[in-house]
Image 1 (cartoon, rainbow, N blue to C red):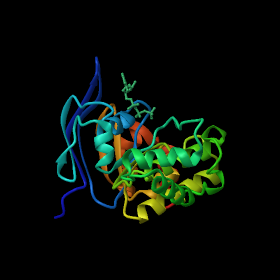
Image 2 (image 1 turned 180 degrees about the horizontal axis):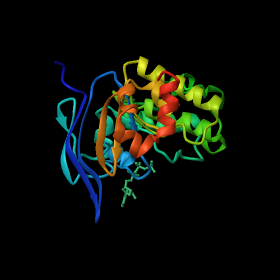
Image 3 (image 1 turned 180 degrees about the vertical axis):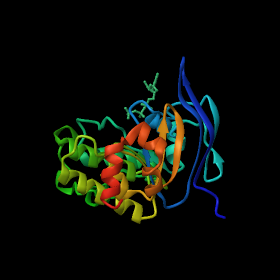
Image 4 (image 1 turned 120 degrees about the vertical axis):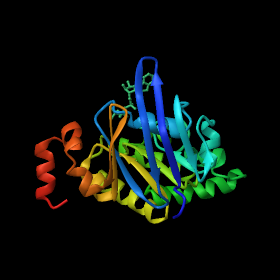
Length: 251
Ligand SMILES: Nc1ncnc2c1ncn2[C@@H]1O[C@H](COP(=O)(O)OP(=O)(O)OP(=O)(O)O)[C@@H](O)[C@H]1O
């Protein structure tokens, strides 16, 4: 059996009195797209923050490609091949769109000169459909544009594992379809993706496996269809009418 790309065991994170993550054990295999769902406050973003070194875990272990990364600095984790997007997008507003991506390529993407970083940035912007915005200030982008810029910045780190935190929130239907295509194209390049997403349409189309957090605990982990039919998941998150609708749609 091949070693998992990411292996999390008995992970815990406490914020003072609050147990935000509680005994979470999870593996991601190379090349998977996994949906991470759960109610507001379930601990989804905290899980990404702990994996990426923003927060130190209170308990448990995290191994990436067999190496322990728990508690490592965020920049060192990024350089090992884990990139993430933020729920609240935060580009450098005065820099151009291209400069934002080039900065990421220089910071942790392995580019050693400004010229090569700008070249790589142009490729990522093309991939994300932002070439025509390259020389505009990042502040001028629409929300959908800023979300695509987040994706381009994360790709500039040459990730093996990409953690996406609600990249579709606030987008309209056409923008969501475009973002979904992008996620699928990124996965087709062999990048492993963990996708936090409230839109079940996106999760069911993108992910072959779903994991569910509820009050910091992992309450389900399995094939999309099985997890959607899981009683505990319906109870905690999906709701009965929604689950029935999905079943009716043959998902
Ligand atoms: N830095 C922090 N300090 C204190 N409490 C925090 C911190 N970050 C998160 N929390 C708390 O941890 C719990 C889990 O939050 P988290 O943001 O991980 O949930 P989530 O599942 O991502 O929710 P949402 O879907 O609303 O984004 C919440 O109760 C939140 O208030």
